[in-house]
Image 1 (cartoon, helix red, strand yellow):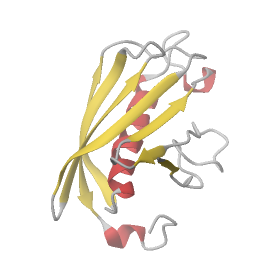
Image 2 (cartoon, helix red, strand yellow):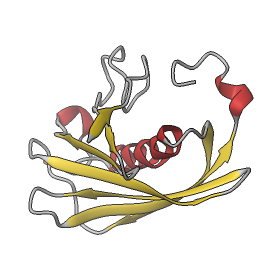
Image 3 (cartoon, helix red, strand yellow):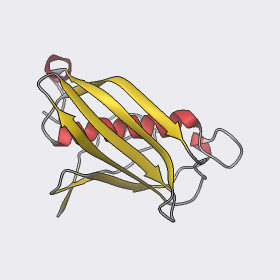
Image 4 (spheres, one colour):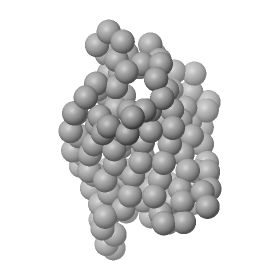
Length: 142
């Protein structure tokens, strides 16, 4: 069973209020795995016909952080590592996923990946997120 995670207003990756944002929809399943299917356009272009590496990094940061939020941890990124394996094409279906790998009292570690339509991993990463409850006192995700 999957549940959709809420949009975050002006968030560049998952907000619906930002006209320049990516606006992807994310789901988390009963096993705590976050997934999203999306398509990028010229607004996200870096090399001709492909996504900018910063767009890939932003998407991975968001999915790796939101999988922590879905597990009940209010976090901010402290460190993310990104490995670019293949360029992300524009106007083709892509899929992102993330999972928690460690959850401590102050530190959460998660991993994520973005895959091409044929399930080839194009971009993958890991992130260290720190608990930051006070930073999000007005967040709708609380």
